[in-house]
Length: 630
Image (cartoon, rainbow, N blue to C red; front, side, top):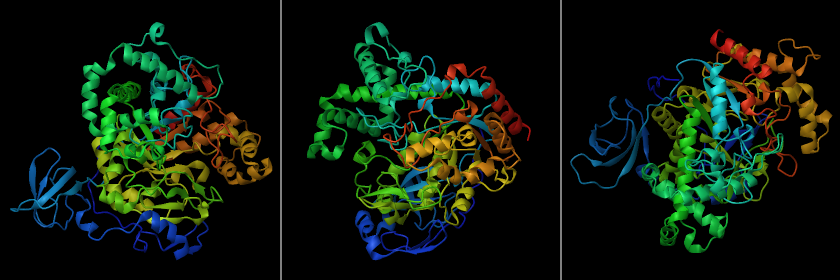
């Protein structure tokens, strides 16, 4: 995947609905295409959570432009990222103006008045040079015989080596972001404490430099088939890592020190938050008042007094970065960017002034969930995000892309509008809040260009008119799921990631064999007949090539991926669960850990046993042949 973005044409028209003064959408179509109208009663709690945008914001908020585009600044001086000052001519941004995050420092020939961020974007994302296929992996469940309680970055390396030996060009993983330190560990990868830093649970502790099991202890290997146990992984891993850190005096490692210095204030803030959590508990909103703001003198004093603890948490991030680099090699790893974070987490603490802590993100009732959904994450307030120079968004993108080469944006429609649910109310009582999508998509393009990272937008659910066109104009790939598409995959767009299923949907084996209906019914309280009725369309699409009802599950898997191989999509994804005949899906939406073991299911095959696995290799070779020789 080694090509660059195309020319930055002018942005295509996108959705431009009418909003009120708070950015709430006044009218919209629901999932049944029925018109809905915002009422003052419904809007009141969301308006309170948003707050009224200040006057004059447009004069100081970041200006996001492309080379060759018109701008309203007149002739100004710009301090570029590299420290040089360059004149920006009036009216039009020169074609050779450097891409990046700059500062407008004042009109030409005058003393600086007030600075303003200038973002110059290529307008288009990085694209792969050629069509390729890859594996979709829930890494926590992809254990080997040498793993601890969950699959780790060494297992990712094993998967990469195996898949690329069969022709794979990329891997797609669940979010690898960090949860809150301590017990219990959050099980859902989609509700992290941060979108900027990764979880040390994914470290192969035995490969940490200096580790001596005789002196530092070791982690235990679970019995085959045992559920993923994040609490045990956290307890064992932290005990061993602390021992290694202390014994080897790792804080003085010059390589670590240089890496830490290069990560600056953001890493220091994260590591300080981790240390504070260990002493004061998992929710910063319940800490002593003086510690509730990251920029307070009390927090600075705490970091100085607990320098070793802060250094330890920074060190574990360095280890993750090193092991991820070894795991990926030169292969693209597409990671998920969740829609949000836990309100009590590190990003909630760091960006508390930008988040609406009186609301949460969700989805209105639709075909996927008739009751609507509340995902529990506080949304970013659009005008406050602009006021913060888009920095929370930039850091989240960059932290997820770094070292991987790809990004899948979960619920990409959230860059246009988000369904805000007032705290304590039902999801159906939510409203749409609009976001500055043109700016945000062009920032995605800039980060993609810098990291040479392919970008996929998960555009499932209720998608308003104009969204997919705006994504395509910026070379953000669409997300095509066989289960949801009436059209033959041969007619799908080239600029897409094609897949049969997702982590929230049935595996082919579970769907065709009927065990997924039993699993879902047990978790939700529905009957098997009711679930099977809901799956009728999925089964019809699975069998659109004439697959007989008597076909085996192995034949159904082969037929599904034969269909997928006909798509012209740039990226074709094989779910590892399908490759090994797994019956259970990773997650049943709308259920929790008391109803089902979501996000805890291990693969039935150890990853170091995959080479030579006849069924998996036969499937992957057939996909490889279809992609290479369509």
